[in-house]
Image 1 (cartoon, rainbow, N blue to C red):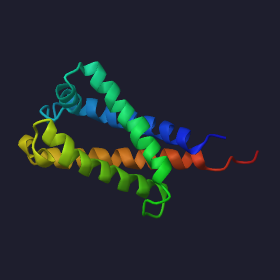
Image 2 (cartoon, rainbow, N blue to C red):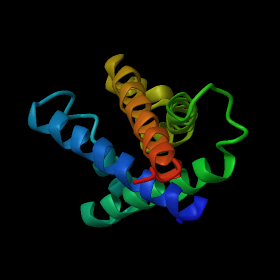
Image 3 (cartoon, helix red, strand yellow):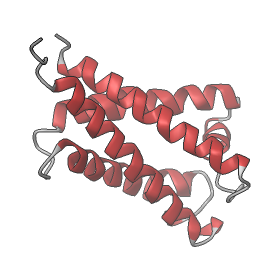
Length: 145
């Protein structure tokens, strides 16, 4: 039986992989190339893209995965997916008011245009839904055979 912290890290890792795949797909499609979170992180941290990806995965899997595991019982919402979405929206707000300005993109990333907050919100809602859904599946009692 996995403990809640391990479930949170696993769920956070899966959600971060999904989010990262969507970010790469967005880049490949040429959608908002100016909204490159990994490049923003690398610039903010004055490090390489590889280290920025590592930070991105640590934040998603460890910080937000463990955060969800610890606080999910306090997050309002009927089920794990809704709770995950609420967490994702909270993470998005923090990103919009702290990270985006530090990265030079302005409050809510408005220096990048109106689509920046909308696209990042959609990505964080998906991240949260996957995080909550995977955590819920890992927490489900085993099926008797």
